[in-house]
Image 1 (cartoon, rainbow, N blue to C red):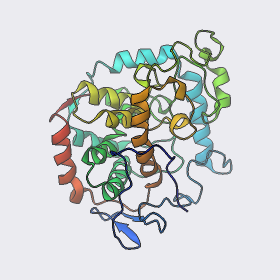
Image 2: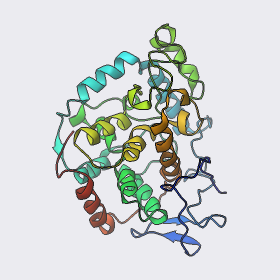
Image 3: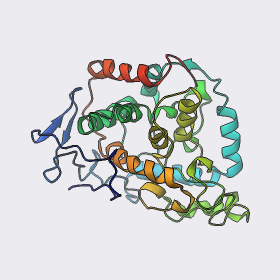
Length: 315
């Protein structure tokens, strides 16, 4: 099947790259992805390695799916406006550790994301699979390759040295807090137990925000997305704003898949969303049991890290 990115207006920065290639895309690290006969680009598979549809949250017969649902129950109950403010204040200090981007990539080998029904591989493989697939189709957008590599680094919050936060405070789909919980959120029924759901300050469409205020001014549920956004921004990355937008909102499926919460966006958000739509199909559908040769691709990504980040970052 061919997965189509949601259509958007023509933009000189965002265009499909078409390259002559064989029936498979063999990337530099040895990672093979299927080629689309229709578009001559990346073609998403029908099912994940478990034999289920991607992002299938309804397969009750599968134990992994049941654990994913329990994860979302805990997340929806506990992610409140006050909780997010507390986490941002604590982790915004960036005083947990000093290390390089690549050192953080290697730390991710110790992380398993319990919210993901499609993935049980080491996290560094997911990062490289995503980055390599994008690199093949968008060879000139090196900032996008690096964004793909680092987009999930905030998952180190699960590790003891970063406080060992529970899974529901680190991974999973994200959503705004401080306004109503839209029905497009996965397992929406569990929000009824969230204290903010019954607070008139937070349970209206705009809540504490103004329409068109811009997503930079919206508090998102706390997790690896927002944390890595803070790390990159506060350490002075030279990635373009679209890269930071992807990092902060790549798990915001109610926005980029269901098209909700758009009333909070401004014009810059709408431009950046075009790149997030491009990124998302690679983030979701490049997950594979076939591993990238880490040592073979490492020099390229080290060069990008050196281009866009300082040698050491505060985390």
